[in-house]
Length: 212
Image (cartoon, rainbow, N blue to C red):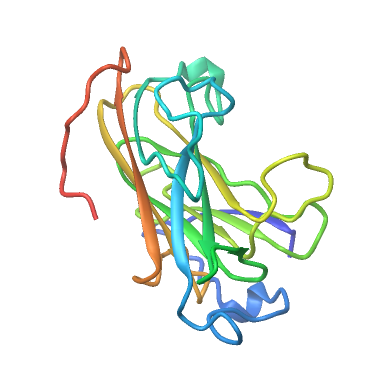
């Protein structure tokens, strides 16, 4: 199996990915972590590039709402106006944990997930980008561990994704949390979310489509 894997799941061709096929060592959801972890998802302002986001946004002080202008289609992925979504699992002392804890970013509404980076470069951790509902837009980013890559200067011990939109006005909700069976769907507990309102000028918001 190639280490970096992108899956598009449609009704016509269903590819089943089992936890055994995604074996990467270690365990999660038990041991010393138990169920005491708190999920924290936030929008990263990218050092001021996204001016609508609190520059101090972090797992400890999350800014979870953004109004953003569409990216140009010509800019490709992740998109010239993409929104950077980061996340952490925090233990009861506020420490970041997540080694070998599988987790998924899952998007609903407008937009799509435009980047789902590998957590550790050439290491054993994996990522899987999926289109769960077969509408042509990637809506699920599974990562088998937090980022732990000595080649990167920032972002270690957190999970990362980027979302984008090239012309569909409305709200995008991105939920993040544990995914024990690596199926690209959040288990339903220990989760947190962000919201992006997309428009042509980046100044419109307040849409609702039902959310999570």
